[in-house]
Amino acid sequence: MKSYILGIMMILGVSVGYAQSSIKWLCDEFNFGAFKEDSGLVTCQFKGVNVSDEHVAIIRARATCGCTTPQYSSSAFAPGDTITVTVSYDSEGRPGRFMKKVYIKNSNDDEQSELRIRGVVIAGEETLKGRYPIDCGKLRLQNDMVALGELLRGKAKAVFLSVYNHTTDTIVPHLENIPSYIKSAITPSIIPPGEQSSISIHYDAFYCEKWGVINDSITLITDSQDARKVTIDITANIVPNFSKMTPGERINAPLISIATSSIDFGRIARDGGVITKEFIVKNEGENPLLIHRVYSLDDGVEVNISKTKLKKGKSAKVVVKVDPAKCKEEILNATVRFVANDPTNYQPSVRLVGEIR
Image (tube, rainbow, N blue to C red; front, side, top):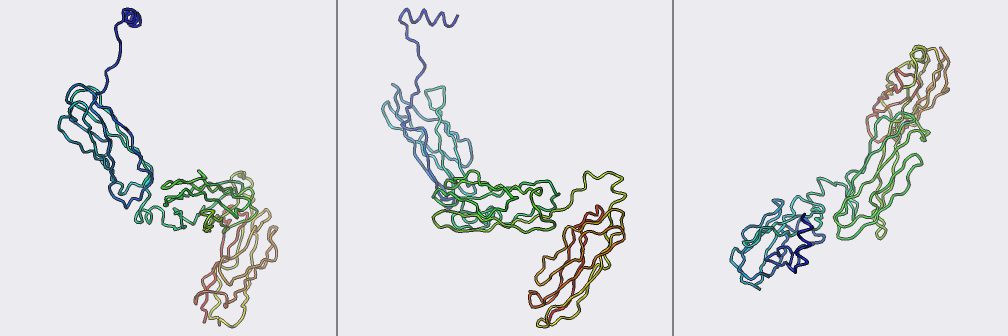
């Protein structure tokens, strides 16, 4: 019916149209671009013309956020006069991209006009310290250390690090020296001023041949121009996966038995040369005991084992060597670590203590 009436009106020459706004804005959007958070308030002006045949006044200007403040004159403007609305944006504590709207209501029109401001706030120094404390030159990192904790053999784990461009330049970083069992990427790969990207780190223990605590790293090249390099340390603890063991297999599982829980080296002369101690590891279970790794992460400590596969009742000798010249502290407080296929005690350890003079 509506279309029929409109058709008749058009045939009869009756004009059909929509109400025109009394104010024609010369521009309804302003882009501040990228600017520092420390800049404080940033301000722009929107100008419009009274295109109606009557006086018009702005009776209300409402922003979508308290950080945006519109200012205007409440005076009536004659036909053809220019109307100015000033809009301020408070960037403090608001890093990142923004888009805000201001709705303008005038005295003559039922509908509101919409004005928009947008831009990118580059975080100030205090914000950077709190959110991105690692200084990488043109970039800032959320963290330069990733601790994955225990990771079952055959499983994978992913973590993400935020990286932030605090400059007015577009940065194209990249990653180097990535171990074969780690997949890492920067998304998005191009970081505009004041924008954030994410470094994904996917660690697959299926492809890692090592056991126990493993310290790796990848290198972040922050920008091709200054080629600054930042090391991101990655630590994982690869442990056996016993999830598929049957109850019968658990009953007959190997049992690791270590002759001592600690070794006291007593007083050691720093220039006295390497000191050697020994202890015994035994399998008190039914099935063969596999010692995947015996090691120490401490400076100056070397560990070796005579056998890594022990049948029921068999034992192996563990030799520990301490070189006091390579120990950084005056107190020896080191750990010998094992990774074994004993489901009840797959990571036993022996503590090494002593005093270095």
